[in-house]
Image (cartoon, rainbow, N blue to C red):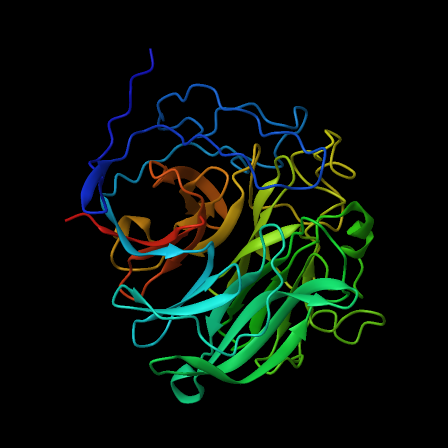
Length: 429
């Protein structure tokens, strides 16, 4: 007979009150409006207790006949870390916050979907930074991610991605500008340094749009597939920025060593291809990792190597919204397997590998934010493979947009709501 799991006391301090975390998966919410004919997600069964050694996910898969390519590629065993932590609200009242970045002095930049960038200092939000170009908001996209230059203390440059309306459609655009502090912060010398190609007309749109500087000082940017059947042939083509990861310099030029540079008909900025809606990007020991949102199932995390093809829409786990299988199945020569996948979906919206000092037991773990499952997911790693899974912060029942590690080792979370918040996870007192 299965016994209930005894958890370590988790002191979640929210709005000045302690909230106990109970061992029950959160109920998924209805996804945002999307293209017609998409069925509602599978409703959850009454949640059982989380049992160490048993998978966290208990619902049936969307794709009934699929099997993982290797052990623990999906439904890894529940592996509690028994870490006590406290959750506090750092800021609130943000309109669908999307991206977060720390400035060297401890302040933070935060983006809001309608087209704003603000500075957070001491719990107070600045007015929107002036000088930001017009942003095209569409479905669940608009203003996207933000990052600071590796030499910010000298040049004060920040970078941000956003959806730009164009004459023949829209696309992800990357811009940079010099941040000027003051009572009314502003951006000077604003310059667009990259535009996703080609411009496309879409309704729902998977834009991707995460960006990060690597240890090589170069910018890596994720670009979505735009979520339209008519544009799918562009994903596997090397002359488009659809469903790709790119690598460029901070001025928009292409560095030496990109895998497709010099190849006839290929965009030289391409780094890897075959992605659907890559909303998470991070580095681990110099290796690039991406979190990619699948269709009905097939959410995945990938260790991204230069020049590799990650399959979409030729192969993938889960199934199409129509109920059909994805492309040619789950395996194909010349295409990479995900390091981990979920079916049904969790809608992964960011990823990081923890290496801070605040939570020693979490060092080496991957953290993934979930929109539809409204939680923070910890993945215990064994090399490049997942050995265990642990859901965290699911009692809040808020869509989680991004997780970011602070210099002191605490974790910061963005909640994806009309009245979004910035939360901080710190060791329990």
